[in-house]
Amino acid sequence: MSYSQQVFDDLSSRYAYQPEFLQAVQEVLTTLQPVLDKNPAYQKNKILERIVEPERSFHFRVEWVDDKGEIQVNNGYRVQFNSAIGPYKGGLRFHPSVNEGILKFLGFEQIFKNSLTGTPIGGGKGGSDFDPKGKSDTEVMRFCQAFMLQLHRYIGSTVDVPAGDIGVGGREIGYLYGMYKRLTTKYEGVLTGKGLNWGGSLARTEATGYGVVYFADEMLKARGQSLEGMRCAVSGAGNVAIYCCEKLIEKGAKPVTVSDSRGMIYDENGIDVKVLKQVKEEERASLTRYAELVPTAKYTPVKDYPAGHNGVWTIPVDAAFPCATQNEVNEEDAKLLIKNGVKCVSEGANMPSSIGAINAFLASGIAYGPAKAANAGGVATSQLEMEQNAGMTAWTFEEVDAKLFNIMKGIHENAAETAREFGAEGNLVLGANIAGFVKVADAMIAQGVC
Ligand code: NDP
View: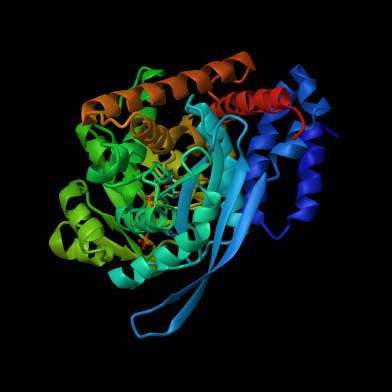
């Protein structure tokens, strides 16, 4: 049995109750065997056994008082997965589905993604099962303050730097930052995604969505194709999806769908990003509101999706951008997209495709950009925010965007070149995993057993 299989089997027997974590590990380990064979030092130093366990993990109780004066209790977490190449870095997710297994999957992915950016940041992730939906601003503020009351002990600008993720946007980062400052009396870049007049970076809000499109464009360019004129399916309607749509339109492509947890919008005329921002960023409303404002848009609730499918992937398109959440593209969805002529899939969400879906995309030979490469623009720009904070300076939007573009181009080149080196031309899953792994594994060996 191969070394990677042995480690995976052992992990599976211990963490069967964390299926998303096991899925994320499986996706990486099944591609690493060629580099493990080439460099026996990785097995000798037990790198796989070490890299699949977080260095440290915190679970804490978060108590807060709602607007009716009732005490509420939530679970809070921070998983500090790997600091071999830099301080832990990764978002905070507030969603009722959050548990330690979900955060371990996200933190594990983050190690390789952060390595791929070429910047010195380690991997971590955190969050809570708190649901910001339906809460007033003051409830969200009290929750964020209670969360930071616990979290501040474990983070710092050279220790661990959280950012946003699902359910954590500019509002939440503001409340979290205010409380961190009050508790520590330090004004430092301990969170990224901050507001522009208090240490944030221009283009951070846009970075993940823009980066996903830059990555798609690089994949297509390498095949002599372009996004221009392509019809695109986008899922999600949050931070990543909105700015993915915006950049697609700038590139001359046409996003025809967006979705949220309750349903989807399909509009042959293309998504109106201005209205989408109003509905999701300002009104925090459901997509039914979008359909009220845009008469040509067709709204379909989740219950009316064709059996076994996410409705978004049933629309025939040239390019697909999953930007909502994990496992939103199953094998049947992937096969349908391929049958309908999709040429490119670039992942904005983390682990949006099941292993069956990934295998279908790879077997079809389409341009497939896995999440840890395609959505790395967000964390890369967070690192640019850290750099600006450390230098007490602020760059222009154009400077940050140009750096983001170069990082995405570099990630694509690195993953494509690594895939070629290991005899798997075009397989960016293998290329990204090996390229991300080698840098971290070599640093772990250099730093010894500690
Ligand atoms: P947001 O909270 O801004 O938006 C999430 C969107 O996805 C919402 O439209 C939400 O709908 C929808 N969604 C969430 N859960 C589900 C679900 N179970 N089923 C269907 N739809 C769902 O989050 P982001 O845009 O920031 O994050 C989206 C994805 O991108 C996540 O996988 C995240 O990990 C990943 N990502 C984010 C980065 C960032 O910089 N923000 C960086 C890299 C990756 P509703 O509002 O109805 O819940």
